[in-house]
Amino acid sequence: MDEVTQLPPLLTQLLGTVESGGVDMCDYHDEDQACKKNRSPLRTCVVTRTIHPKEHLLRFVIDPMGQVMEDLAGRCPGRGIYVTPEPNAIRALLKRMGVWKKMAGTKPVFMPESAVLLERLACGLTRRLREGIGLAKRSGMLRKGLSETMALLDQGHESLVLLLAADTAENTREKFDRMVRIRGNLDVLELSNREFFGAACGVGPVAVLAIIGQNHSRRIKADGLRWLAFFGKS
Image (cartoon, rainbow, N blue to C red; front, side, top):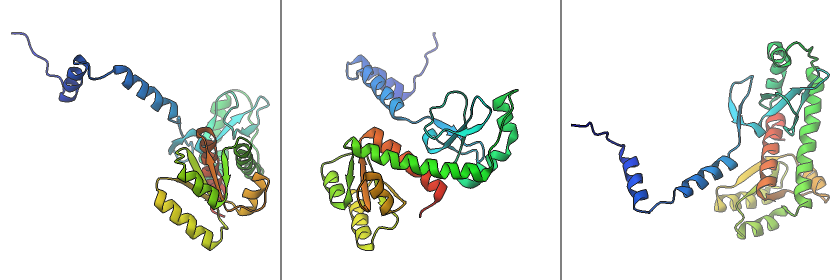
């Protein structure tokens, strides 16, 4: 008697459904492709050994002259080293010469002083966040103030990130918190201050910003998280 191989119940059910014409296998393929498209690649911090989406980390490269350089946009060619955007982790990274020599091979490596690199990162992270907000405004993907944000949420936008200035007045903060509790499941970052938000938008002080659109909101979220990790809540 031939041996009968028992299939797992879930696979048996799926095969039976396919044979009956109840499942289009293209649906599973399309769903899988959509997940892969929206999923961010993961990278490991060489200092903490923790795993994060790569845009939430800082990337460093060695330029053709052997200088260690930050790659805030993540677009420089060649191999890169990833680290959590915290000052202590960055200082520790600079001391790990074995990591840099392994990446550089036989080429000499020139390390910046930690104070110099941290100052460059402070300016670069702030500039990138400001430019991202300005780009969203010019693209029509930004709403300013609590009223415009509430109106945006009433329209049912899904891909959005909310920014709340750390120096927001108490009454505005209470209204904002109530709005977030009612809506639920919102990406909210509290950082910087009203003057910074306003300057990035080309207007006066603003306490609340809403960034819409998948690309813009994803960039602002990543840059905002890196800014917060580097500076902390101000």
